[in-house]
Amino acid sequence: MFSGFTGLDIEVNGVRLRGRAGPDPHKAPLLLLHGHPESHLMWHRVVPALAEDYFIVAPDLRGYGDSGRPAPSPDHSTYSKREMARDCIALMEALGHQRFFVAGHDRGARVAARLAADAPGRVIRAMLLDVAPTLDMYEDTSLAFATAYWHWFYLIQPAPMPETLIGANPRAYVEGVMGARHAGLTPFPQEVLDHYVSGFDGADRARGACEDYRAAATIDLEHDRLDRAEGRKIEPPLRVLWAEHGVIERLFRPLELWSNIARTVSGHAIDAGHYLPEERPEDIVDEMRDFFIVDEP
Image (cartoon, rainbow, N blue to C red; front, side, top):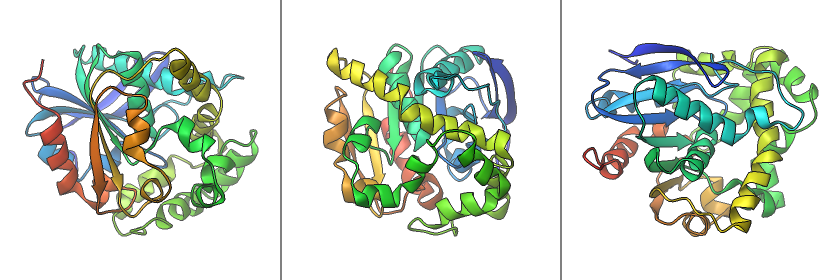
C-alpha cells in the first residue's frame, strides 16, 4: 500500500507521531495530513503516483491512528490546530526539511491552514480538501449544517461521555460517520477501514479525536478571531477543493470564505463526496501536480 516507504515513529513537540514517509528524501517534500475519523492510510490511493515527484510525509495527527495521545489540558490547547501545526514543523525539521508543500483533508486541512497562517516561511503552498474556515462554519450554523455534521456538536460535549460511548463500539461510530456520506463505505478497503476503527477502540483512544473537536470549538476559534481582528491573512497560496456532493458545496461558499482570510486562493468542486482522495484519487493527483510546482523556491 505504501511500497518503498519507511515507517514513521518519532517523538517531536512532546508527542510520538507514527505514519509513513518516503520513498526518496531528495525530492520536493509534501506533507499529507488526514481527516476524521481516519489516519494516514487515507492517502493510500494517491501516494504511489505522488511519490514519483515528491518525498511524501504522511503522519497520523496527534490523537489519531497510531500516534500519541497527550493528556488534555483544561483549555484544550494540547489539541489545538496551532499545537498540531507545531508538530508538523518539528516533524519536517527532523526529516531535514525547512520548507515544504502541505495538503490536508478535513481536520488535516484545518491544521494545514493554521500551519500556513502561523509559519508562512515554512509552507510553500497549501491545498485544503473539503473544508470552509472553522470560524465561519460555526458562526453560520443552521439546522441543515448541525444535522449533517452532528458529530461536530457531539464530540465537544464534556469528557468522558462522548469518548466512553464511541470507545465502547468504535465500528458503529466510524462506519456510521463515513458510511452516511455520498459514496457510503464503498471507497474504503476493509483493512483500511479496520485501521480507522482501531483508532477509536476504547475511551482512551477515542479521547484524542474528541479533544481535537473540543479545541476547534474553543481555543481554535480564539486564534481565528484574533487573526481577523489584527488583519492577519494567510500568505502562502491556497488551492481549495471541495466535494460537489457534500456539505461544503451545499451550505457554504468556500472560495469566498477562504479569500476573506488568505491572499491567494484558487479552487473548485470535484465530482465526488467528502473523501476526495479515496473517491477520486486520479483527480487529486492531477490537482497536486498542477499546484505543487516542484522547482518553486
